[in-house]
Image (cartoon, rainbow, N blue to C red; front, side, top):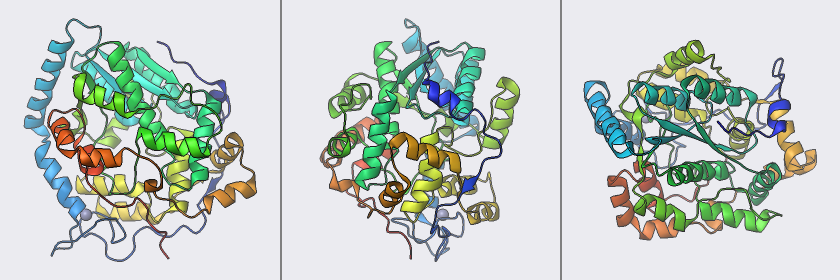
Length: 416
Ligand SMILES: [Zn+2]
């Protein structure tokens, strides 16, 4: 076990009681105009269309995926075949698969599940030095008890702060792109280092949903070009994912990506209780809030900078899969997003923004990712190749659909 931690990540927020919360200024209620009669997406959602019954195309996509990735007995059969395959291909290795862990509910549960199936996972974690202490403790609690080893890449905190600051100064909305890219790179590096042919992805479209086109964009070239223009120091510890490695790992290494949650009867609330009982795992109060910068991105930055609200994804998904009623989801969405005041202060302090500069940066005109160099034009040209990669489980279907087709500019103008 080699979890290295930046001391500041542990000490800054030792006491999280009696927090003050802040709602982003000018926040407007997310549901405006026509709202889907089945989920809670509204007409401001990019590329949305409603059928005669008032059901949106994202609900239809859910149903297509629901049929494509069955749960129950059929799902179990598929999973057992995948487990047998992993054991067979991993029999001469120390590990059968790599799984990215964050201390969150989905990945913690999956590590347990993989062990139940008799697999030998290697956990992988990208530490961007903004972890909440609860998340770090969760990682330890689960991996220690299950005797799972951890492969971790720790970014230099000054370097990572420089990346975050560059993304905020650039005016784009994708300030979490560097973390998403680095986590993918960390999993591939772990797989390559230990010759592991499978990466387990903890995504669940039934609880997390599939983000609308244009809500999120990230690739390695994007991180590089934003940082080149707005950053101040060379990137030495940040594990970027460049095109050469991406193609090497997806096409030539034989590493396959599997998403077991697509085939499991996965109930998030029940899982949280189970993890708490089994491992002393703690819930940190919201999806993706296990990391301070992610919390800022979801609960403050995005609702302030754009017309959308990331909570919508999960609530809509749970409505479609019957884990939440539509009324419950609408009631949750009616509560404005809130961010801990300390988290906002931490962002200002670590990124070196004065109060005035912070406000100025958050009021910059929104800049689309297309203003920067990205791999998107290449992905579009190489669409047939990535279709094949999707069919071989080398890239997720969502990657093929979102990255390989010309799409929205990635900017939603703030409503009103
Ligand atoms: Zn819908």
